[in-house]
Image (cartoon, rainbow, N blue to C red; front, side):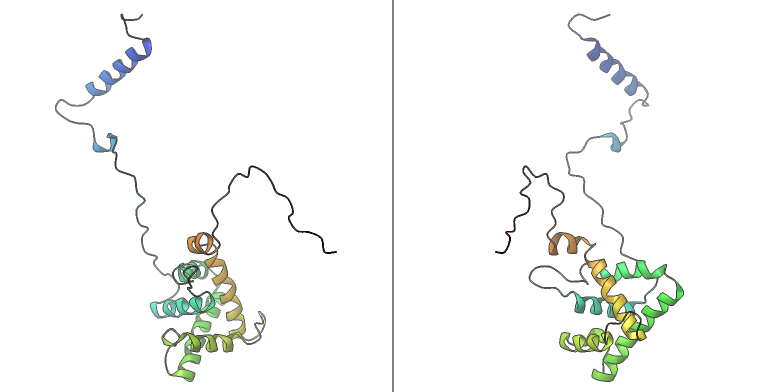
Length: 194
């Protein structure tokens, strides 16, 4: 059945609209969620990270240690801006007790070395002094060596992992733009040495 000049589809749309409006009480508008807005949809800010493993002073030291390993430069922000201490907190909060102990002892060792050498916590030392302290912590970088060497080895690896899995590390430092379709594949571009 078709009304003169009206398609079946248009008629069904009209009937559905009438049925929907009849379901609303008289004088009441539909809820605001059902209205289309021309305003852009924006993502809400994420809630600030709640540290579960490290206290504020330890976080300050971790931020400074991370920034010594991957500092800010003209190319991109460093480890602190990338939120590496948050990554470390998430990683260590659920780790085995001996791993937590290694991190707590390592942070304390960095502050102790700074206090003994320069009379202030690691985070308050100048960048040059921080490098000197970190070099002392590193020793021979033996993952099976002293507590300090094991801590430095774990810190360096986790800082790099945290940084290069962050938005800053991926998009700003590595300048990764996402997967892109290539029209042509150029193949290997190097030439053989003669």
